[in-house]
Image 1: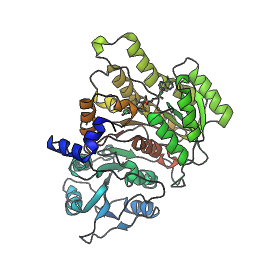
Image 2: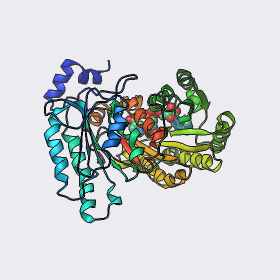
Image 3: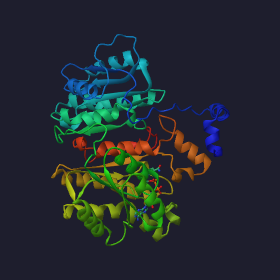
Image 4: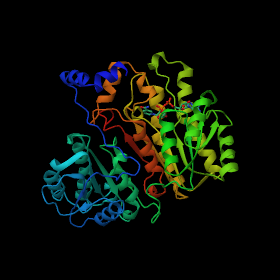
Length: 444
Ligand code: NAD
């Protein structure tokens, strides 16, 4: 065991870190195949006039969750859900405060708080806009107050999108969102009535994952395959051996290609059309870092990071869209980064590329929307990978700790978030950037 891990994970190490005043991280409950999404009942509250209580009950009962609407005052809950869509005034916010005030102490370890609201931009009366926007401040603060691996998130569900919310409800109300906290996402129209198998939503779908030889890409490929997708794993020829190993593991196909090559988009389009007649899920995960302070950075370090992390994604998307390789209802998920949101010393090139991704998904969402497709970004914070294992001890320990969950995430946490956005039933979520960062204090 490396010294740093020993310091944090052993009983002696825990004593040392405690003495240093560092918070002790709680183990996070993650989704294991075949296990129920929650390990206890869900308490559902609603403001008068709310629109979503029946959608929550139907979506969660169907996957075996006990939904309780009358709190008996002594049970421990695995999730607290409040339908705040009926709140139209600042006074009305009191019902949300009372619900959480009375129940939060009985939220179990790795519990989930999920508040449902109406997108403030869809409201007209200033009081209603203010009240719905206020919910975000409350939820982000609750996320900082909950303990023992619990999370709090907010889903703004537009009027008329109630039936499109199922995949989002099931993501946030399960071990799949273990490292996602303090987020506000929006669910809009999307396709209604998409029937997907809860365990194998990607059955019959083809997914392409770039940078799949190792790290997050390998974890994403593996989860998509486990949930039914036929996965095309792409990486540079220099990673050929690892790539073959990943592709074999997931019973997928290995494609050796440098995505920055001039003809890469065309070759990829041809491969996907000839072999599969198109692609349903595209995960732009390949990425590199070439860290240097801006004043010390050379042209090559600047250009290579922009080329791999941003320009290649733009070019591939343009080609696959122009040649209609992305099938109707396709899902594109792009890896951004917390650095792209907060900026990071020594990473001007990387942060620029990852912030560019956020702009790209906003710009392409309406384009994909013409064929019922979506495009979103996932912005990881500190994830335990080979890349972060190379960081100096102090920086690593700091990166791992400065978030509400007090620990780094795992590749599976990123993979689960990608898989949620890639699901056929997630058509109501598009143009957004979701952070997988344990509610990092950076760039909040
Ligand atoms: P990694 O270095 O382990 O894997 C990246 C993969 O991309 C490698 O296999 C690499 O060969 C491949 N790749 C690089 N250039 C390529 C090219 N031109 N063509 C094809 N493939 C190429 O990195 P990771 O930690 O798994 O990160 C994956 C993604 O997540 C990256 O986009 C990264 O920026 C992002 N990210 C990671 C973290 C983290 O904590 N690990 C945090 C934020 C964002």
